[in-house]
Image (cartoon, rainbow, N blue to C red):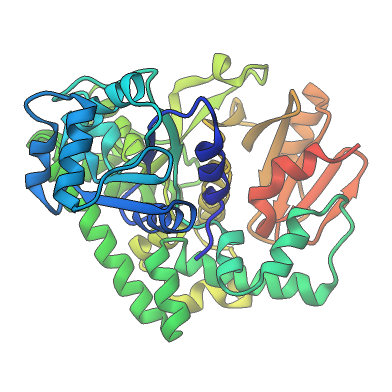
Length: 438
């Protein structure tokens, strides 16, 4: 399946200042598949070492981290040399061997002519506890679950994806195309973007099999809580993880520690939330009541929402049936819009936006997302239904007079002055579409 990150991998390969690349992302988002495909297509040879599956590989990075010795030993082990420029060396699951990550520093300093990619699902939570991290010596990329547009491309709708990506104006799409995209979006909301789930559905057209895989993934993530954390940390991580769907189902979706455990406090769970974020399992959306640039400088990091990495997994945790999601009478209407907001958060984060923010004004108004587009702050309201009311947007616009204000909803493209309505299925294109408007 095609992934947008492939273009970034090509840019990394041709960059004359290239460093060893660390590809991060949650377990099973497709890191191994995409790097292997990249290596096989773009290099004469690709040498793949899975450090988790073969624990003996850890000895390659001991007792020293001399890159020339390591490369020579890998060549002897594989029966062919690691060649500069023409071989891609792929170190997978590097979180199991922290010394392997540390060694990347020396590859950069002493053998920069070699092309090396390391990947790991829990690098951010495991490295640094046991070994030093090579700060400033690596390039980084993050891989997320498939976006809706990637899902469409995998379904053979490349022509539609290309049209949406190149759209310059806010002219509505033909109703037939718009309605077709909404129908496909509803299936995506059930399936989500985990590659194995998507491929299984495409192969067998069986949503039951897809839901079984989602359940297995959730079980694997729970297992990681105890595998890569202390016992007390694992308990707290599990408590926060299980509480996320319920937290999002509330009218006020701000994360409350007491909902994870009665009497819970910030001091009990701050490390846990950072663990989930570093593991790629949750997105933290920070509050601001002062929408000024840079947004990070005005964020209140004690107030935030937690969204799951994938809307399909959120549906599996909530045990939502396909009918509930796809029934036209239930169009995105349940759980106070949280399901739709979670979808939008995942689509925006996959665009490489480092952090997301939301705005509140006391108890009178709330804007779901604030984005920075061409040095302007754009308020974005998410609507799960066809309701045209935009009370919070009006409050924000009257107070701050933004260059643009935006609503994401099931409605078609529409522009009225500096207000734009974008259909939910282009949520990931929102920054690019707004940047093109005069």
